[in-house]
Image (cartoon, rainbow, N blue to C red; front, side):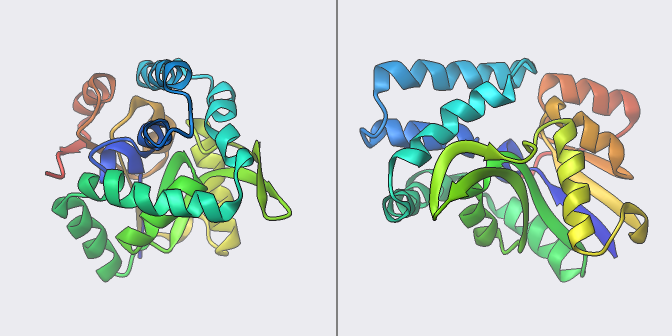
Length: 220
């Protein structure tokens, strides 16, 4: 059995669910356009540049979750899936995930985007295991804070190892390990697996992948 890990945004998805969730809330009138649109873009640009302060971003991204009851958030998310996410899911991504599941590998989506946004997306792909940044909940409501270590950069390794521990497994239990990602921010986890695979990589990751002889694919 292999361990197969998938990044989500700009890897399995042809777009970024984090960015699009904020845009969706702006379009719904939940967030003030003038104030939030520029901040959303600034954080997105920082992520691409590798300069993102993950805690500052999470304060921005998780705050709206604390302002509304879960039923309202779930209703918005259902619309978000139809309007924003479904158009970003391409056949090649579905086929890759389905093949890995059919082959009996242990598969997980590993993403910095919080689990409220990403859990329904993981279910859409048929992936039972999601390793994501966890928003804090108290009494069934989100607090606007993060719970535990964000699943970002080196934190992805920590969170994957915690998840493996819950499964009663370790890295060495698998014949091979794969991680599919588009981003140079994922270099720590790409370097940890036995088979890193760059998917539509950003310029920095493309340069690294080509220099190290890593597989580069498009999923188109």
